[in-house]
Length: 495
Ligand SMILES: [Zn+2]
Image (cartoon, rainbow, N blue to C red; front, side, top):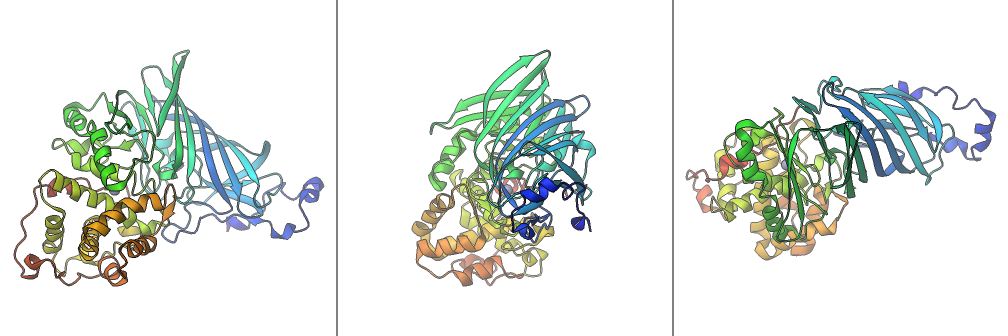
């Protein structure tokens, strides 16, 4: 195994050996994964990142990306070696100013051996110089980089960073970001957060974006192409920046009619989830052919396909709900995906109610009634679906149904207090399904383990809930008007 390799030079120099304290035996390599059972090699052990500074240059004609990543981190163990998750070609790595040796291993590991081992609790600065054609790189047989006619886009879940910057790629290691990208004049570069400045020189324009709140790696996005950018401010005071590919053709009107309502929807969601947690909001619609949308922090990624059948504010509600449920509070492990998708879907149900297109209860009834007991739908456990079913429709629909059951069990007052209190409870952090159950029990004063077990953790259709006489009698449940729009927003992922 590659993990047993001793990097050349690491033990050679006497001065290096002298620099190692008496407890040298305690120095060991960081693990190649952060410990997520769904994805054993995602993230890395041994350090915690606080900031990514990415200075990039992109040529749309060839899809070539050059970069220097400066990563600020702190070691969490006595560290002899550590991994970053990355796919592009690396030419140089420095740790605390000194050149480090590096190699690659597995599907996406960049293995870095610093000249001197790093004591636990040390602040480190890692500089990685790299280049490559992201669309030419794949891992596990897929690519999260979407080439477009006029550029490229990085947006996917649970992984997107490997194609454009080296990282500790797991939601539990959040960091702030400065993303600076030079592109030929006439091309725009978009990323998360706020555009700090632009500068033009010798035919190239540099865009400097800043995300000043902690952000999970998969929520970092990069979009390069020809965009029309709109700006505004919501009634609630949230600055909004949206962008539309100049090449959307027939879907341009429907995309704008949906995404331009971002400010209004952010304010509406704030009524349920509390104040918007970031300094800017918005979305972008590149000319990709992928089918999904993604809650990339402060700058949501939408596929034009979301708007192929006309405007769809429901998908905007879903992705903006994630800014609280997913981004502000992120999952602890990928098994906790219900923390994201159950609530983003439930927000769509609330929006349906708001729009007069079916109440949350009607939608819950429809989900329950439209899947017979022998439907494989019920074999998916939203509370722990497994990596292959992580984005199955049951995680969304059965997941939202479980939330309606919770609402019926604890009553509207406690339920809406939970909905609003939860994001603040874990602000800018991570939480699990178990944490949510505990919080709901604490706020409502009711034991909820049976309810959570039945609706989230059993691979079978739960018995009809008593509150729903309609379903109990087996009466056919009419499809709510919002249903097709809601289902059209399901994230269909690239793998
Ligand atoms: Zn979602």
